[in-house]
Amino acid sequence: MNRPVGSRKIPVIGILGGIGSGKSSVVRGVTGLKLFIIDADKIGHELLARSSVRDRIANEFGANVISVDGQVDRGQLGRIVFAETEDGAHARRQLEEILHPAIRSEITTKLKTIPDDTDAIVLDAALLLEAGWDSQCDRLIFVDTPQHLRQERVKSNRGWSAEELARREAAQWDLRRKRDAADGVVDNSGTPDQASEQLKTLLTSML
Image 1: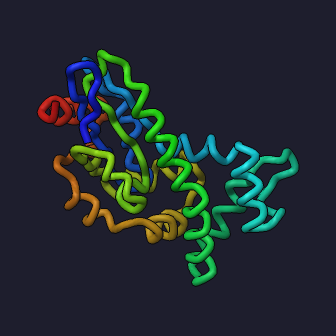
Image 2: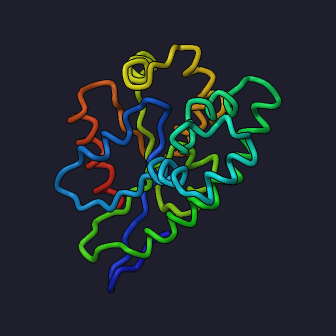
């Protein structure tokens, strides 16, 4: 879904990858191209701070998901929606019904504010395929990161065990399915700079 800016049409590129794949860092490491990056996960976190969204979540999941400072307790909410039970799956769907339309609306708004000198729009979203946001994209790129590296990242950055990572990933599409949906693949088994350079090459070929 190219976005016209002036007389040009700017491609929208969706970035796929597993949890802890480092896809956001790979995108940020690209140099020499003017990218307009839309981070759907960041949008989701910002939405949790809105009183209207916070109130809906409290009404749906109970007051115990609101911390003493009045903010959504993401840890407590995560334990509810990622529980490996039918109740957990139902809770996850309920949360998605609250957040996904709002995130899509924010994405649409951001797509209307593209600077004229942008080379490509990059949509970075963990649930890009699951939420149907790939309909906003012209091409998709998968960041392929080995399991052991992803596990190291989530243990270091989020304190997750291997079991927690597996539980979270079970709520998403299989990585092979995501890779098969992509128009290009970045090998992120090496250095961050190497992965970013691969991404730059792929992006350039899609302009």
